[in-house]
Image (cartoon, rainbow, N blue to C red; front, side, top):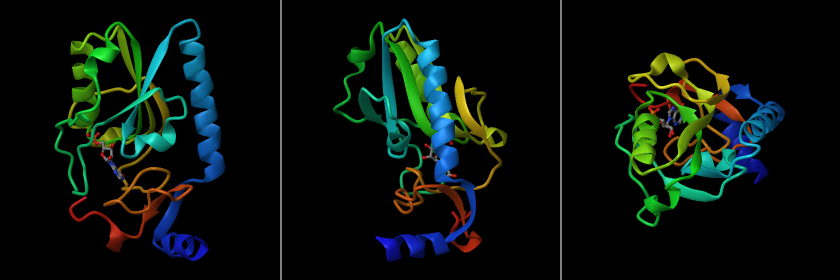
Length: 180
Ligand code: IMP
């Protein structure tokens, strides 16, 4: 594990958020969300693939992926076939996502959840790349606004790699997504 993690560390140019900073941010967000929903029954949906690391409150999971192992956001949301959309009817739903980029994934997901009869739908995101939006979308809870750089770690992968890194970092330019 150590040599694997050292090899991965060598691929990272810059640490954006350390494990300690991530813990602080998630702690703060957890308290903020807990406060907002204190007397409501909440259904937290973690977005696989990356979102599961960030979701400490999750009750259910579904897949919504617009990147896959590719490089650009398609904006179409694919739900896991095992996810039962009728289970969100009448519920206060909070979607937990690790990163919002163009906003395409979250805006289509939120409208799908609203159409499916959720009583309320809000979005919590660890990192928001606001400057890269293609559609207007403002998450309700934001861990940190960041620049346009491509990041990995803490559940966020690059073609399935670096997901398990305990911090969030910017990979070296030669390893970054082509065209990003
Ligand atoms: P959006 O639809 O463009 O907002 O895409 C959001 C999704 O794109 C996230 O859930 C990630 O899977 C992926 N993504 C966006 N930025 C990055 C990044 O910097 N590193 C890895 N994946 C990213």
